[in-house]
Each structure stands twice: as structure tokens, then as C-alpha cells.
Length: 156
Image 1 (spheres, rainbow, N blue to C red):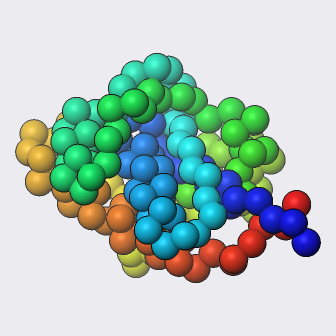
Image 2: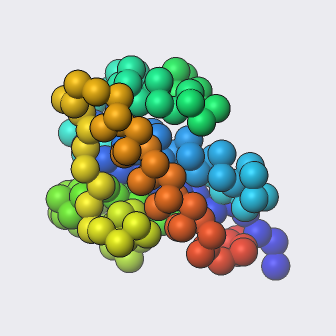
């Protein structure tokens, strides 16, 4: 059977911090491992065209990630339909998807579960880069865990 890349959607509140970092980490891990993935990200707050949070850009660069091209986008039914898996940062994000995007049912998973927690804390508002590094490192563990457990192919 022919196959296509896994379509992964990462969702947080504003799509300026956690979900773009997870998206870029997924691409990086896929490049290193050869896992066939397309990753995107979106937010539940409806923010549009804002860049990634500067402190997250900084800590991403420490891992060789360039988040400067990122601009935020809201979650849409089209993105939900595109996604095979939707990884959310908080229980509230899952609730938002279930309420406003019924096509998400059966696709949503708490990303933090790959690090033994339900939720990944939002570092927005923190003064120190350390908080963003801690979030980045947790996201890296979670993304690696999620991708390493995916089936090999997605049949079309």
C-alpha cells in the first residue's frame, strides 16, 4: 500500500510558545530518525500572525532550531481534518477541541503523558530563560516519546 507522512498537529493556547517549539522539535527529530512526519501547530486563543515568543526563539536556537519564521495561527476545522494526531499541552485544550472541533474526536492526546504528566506548563510571563529551557526540554522528551511510538506508515 502507498503511504504518506504522519500529519501531526501541536496545539497550545496562543501558538507562540509551546506548540511551535513542539512542531519544530518534531521536524528535527524526524530528520534525525528518518520518521516520515509533517508537523504544524495552532492555538486555541485565535491569535493570528504573531511571531514566536523571543525567549522561546532563543532557547530553540540553542538546539539548532530557528523559530523566527513562525507566525501563530488559530486552530481550524481544516487543520483538524488534516491531522492524524493532535497533541495538546493542557486538558483545557483537549476540551476546546472536543467542543468546537468535533472532527478532533479520537485524534487528541495530551503530549505531557510522554513525560509522565497531564499538562505542560506555559512559560509565558516568566522573566528568566531557565523557565523556557525547562519547557523546551520537557517538550523535547515528549515529542521524542510520541514520535518514537508512532506506527511506521500511514496508509492512504
